[in-house]
Amino acid sequence: MKVILLEDVKTLGKKGQIIEVNDGYARNFVLPKKLGMEANNKNLNDLKLQKAKEEKIAKELLEHAQTFAKELSEKHVVVTMKAGEGGRVFGSISSKEIAKAALDQFQIELDKKKIVMDDHIKNFGTFQVGVKLHPQVTATLTVLVKEEK
Image (cartoon, rainbow, N blue to C red; front, side):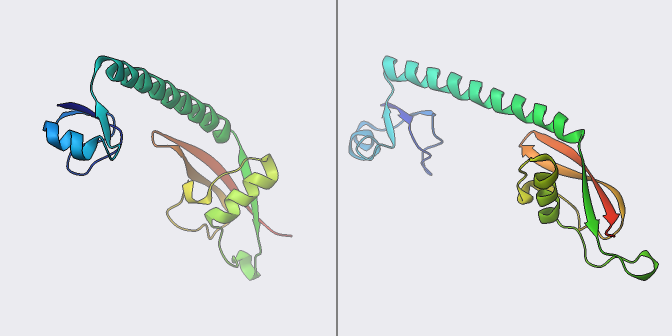
């Protein structure tokens, strides 16, 4: 019997796949537990429409992320730090401070976990920081670190 999976099943396959299983296995396990449904013409057509809708939504999310990345790359976030004698820095700037500064200055909410930094910023100057907006889109945000007066 051909079955369309409604959920990921470890031994059978991923959601949306059409698989062939024994009739008894389908009637006694897959169908009663709502892990899949019979692959008839109506269900196959519904699956095709659902996949088209998901692709359209994914495309819109990608376009939105690309637009936001372009907008974000034009911004310069200014963060201040305390300095001691000889311009030595006290502390460092982490992704949390960058996210807070972006919210304060531009009303842009960035998730601190999506800000990609090799290490905390420990110097004054201009730095390029990556922001993961989508699995395929990473924006570059310019962070300007100044001395606090």
